[in-house]
Image 1 (cartoon, helix red, strand yellow):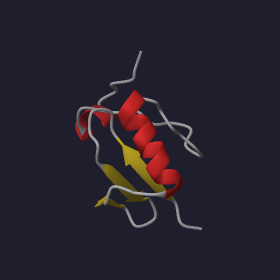
Image 2 (image 1 turned 90 degrees about the vertical axis):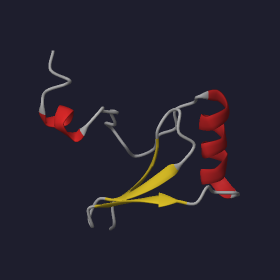
Image 3 (image 1 turned 120 degrees about the vertical axis):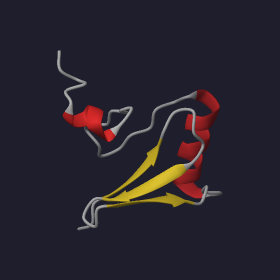
Image 4 (image 1 turned 180 degrees about the vertical axis):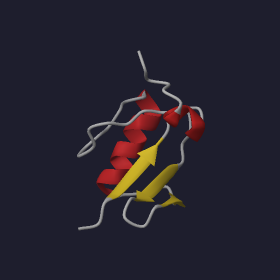
Length: 73
């Protein structure tokens, strides 16, 4: 089974698809209908966070900060 995640970052209307098996991230067209369009409209209009099947997601300033312990306490 493919592991694909759709990502939207607060303050940015664009959506990205990350194919975890292939190791790629690509910009996707803004959905205009269906459940993904509804979820995208909700996050853009009200700032709602929509998640399903993901148990950890953290925005980092750079890839270096991820390995640099930015979440260490």
